[in-house]
Image (cartoon, rainbow, N blue to C red; front, side, top):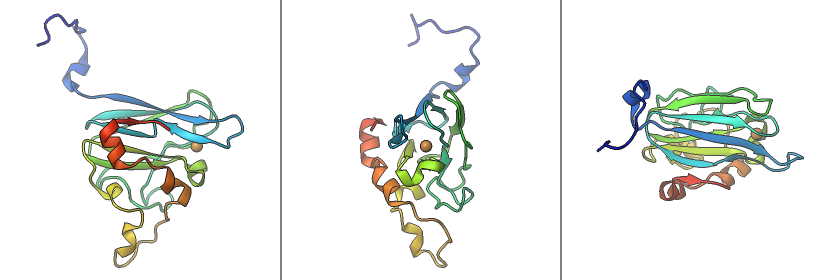
Length: 170
Ligand SMILES: [Cu+2]
């Protein structure tokens, strides 16, 4: 099946055939009025490494997780939360490798209220990130988690659109 395809003789990556690398740019217009992740939604296979790269302005890539400033849990249970910290200079980047299947919602800390959020689906749309934004309000006791801001709620690409298109850009 691989006949005719030149394969590097020494590539250790052959042990991870199927793994992907996906770049997500962190964008801004010149006065910071419009900020966004590009692409804003991606469907990937388990083991994919995501690289966020700042192009303009100052951003973070931060998972919706209680460990991150009391945000609600919107990544798979048991998945490791991440927070890039501030990526200040153009070209600054941050990587995570995602293995657990499910929906991963994340935000930019300085721009969450401006609607700068993104969604990654690993393999299938399961887990807390597939639930409505206020799902935890029905827990007893109700966790002391932050609500997802209105602007952020409105900007997430739908799970259906990501599953259909694979990559969603604004
Ligand atoms: Cu930002």
